[in-house]
Image 1 (cartoon, rainbow, N blue to C red):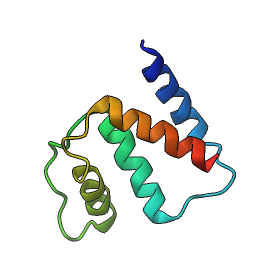
Image 2 (cartoon, rainbow, N blue to C red; image 1 turned 30 degrees about the vertical axis):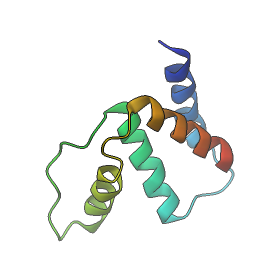
Image 3 (cartoon, rainbow, N blue to C red; image 1 turned 90 degrees about the horizontal axis):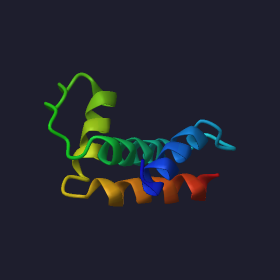
Image 4 (tube, rainbow, N blue to C red; image 1 turned 90 degrees about the vertical axis):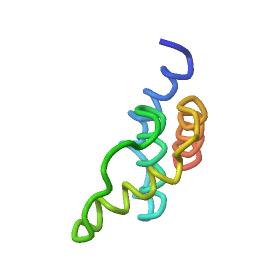
Length: 84
């Protein structure tokens, strides 16, 4: 495991213990960066219109298409550190 992956794993653990709950826009950004960093580009089918939460998550992740996994991991690490 690379140093970046280890730091990413630690940031994932740290995200569960933030001092206060982030707003919904920040939560979507955390989710999208996590998915891009751990999975890569979104290849999943877009959720139906009636599932607004899943659709918002899908849209947030899809906006990061083309961002490298390493770059997304670093952005995730930086965001969690900023929120801690």
